[in-house]
Length: 125
Ligand SMILES: [Zn+2]
Figure 1: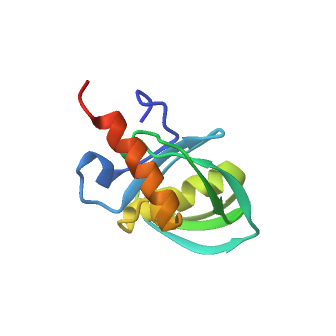
Figure 2 (figure 1 turned 90 degrees about the horizontal axis):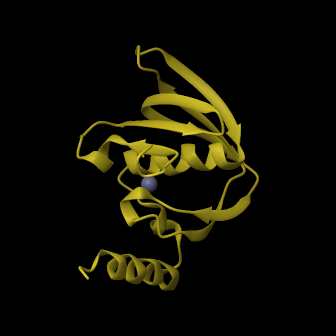
Figure 3 (figure 1 turned 90 degrees about the vertical axis):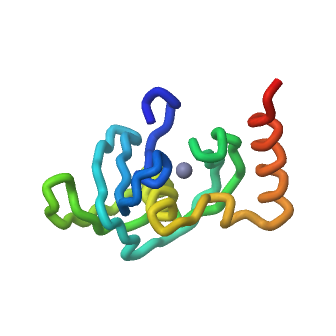
């Protein structure tokens, strides 16, 4: 995650079949196992990228606040509410744990655009 300049990484992204993610975003460092989004509120717009889609960013609306419930590295359940980028990270990484990429939230047209950019970047030169 650090090598790629990311702020969050889910286990599935590195081929590990666990519902677990790590994040280091706006000074918030945490490990979240079995993450669930308990509640959300408000709305924010912003660019979102993903290490699994070669960081091709897309403008995406997300809730402004998100309350996360998960277990820490010791297995202790915790809840944490964040807003802004950290909330976006909670939602993005929990999506990964549920088998969803952020582009799933885009319109079919915009999703296609991101995928075309991604394929272009992946093509050998
Ligand atoms: Zn991602």
